[in-house]
Image 1 (cartoon, rainbow, N blue to C red):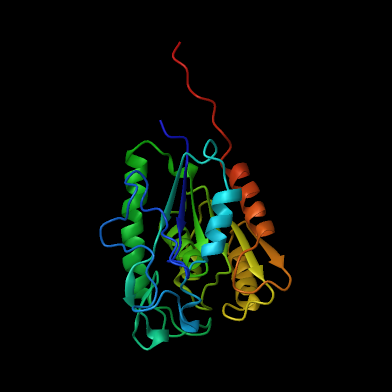
Image 2 (cartoon, rainbow, N blue to C red):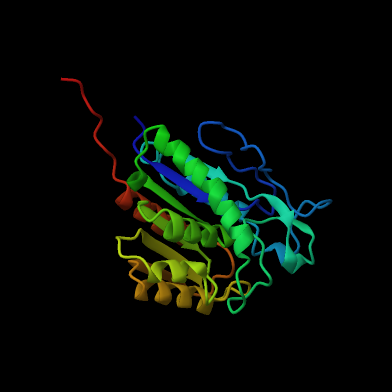
Length: 256
């Protein structure tokens, strides 16, 4: 029986590094496209930075991330290609739409909830295949981290934990509204953010962390001076240590 599961929502990379598809399949889920950036180019434009996963970070995670024996399966999911309002409606690989990239505007809740529904189906599939929900982590970089927070804190509060790297929630996020009504235990949050981030401001991530803490989430925020909207080796190592702590290796069951 599988021991545990790590789901990492992440958008396509700037250098077109194709992420793994859904677990078990080895390829993309139906309706998902891998490695796509702006049509007609091999790299994302400046407007796409917030939606694009970081190819170098993905390679670093693969080289220095969680050993296979400690993460039985790793699902690295690309975001869908959809019209993106901050790019004037041009198509981009994003988890959901935004009215603009800032934390003081309404959320595009229709597109967020649509993705939560699709990702819920993936989580349910893993549970059907023998992975307990308290052995599942979800998380991602930038918009992927925001998607993970919506998914866990609104719909799957019995997961093992959430990681959000260079991510944020809007000031009046539906996540906060859901947690105000919550009375059960919540997944722990592992959060990282660079102080030099010019796209997703450090103050947005810091405010997200403080709000979630005030609503009962056990949340840590790891600050990286002079780091822009990207990951580095130290951040990946900290994430690895947290994952191993959250999902310790289970001793194999023996038949007596």
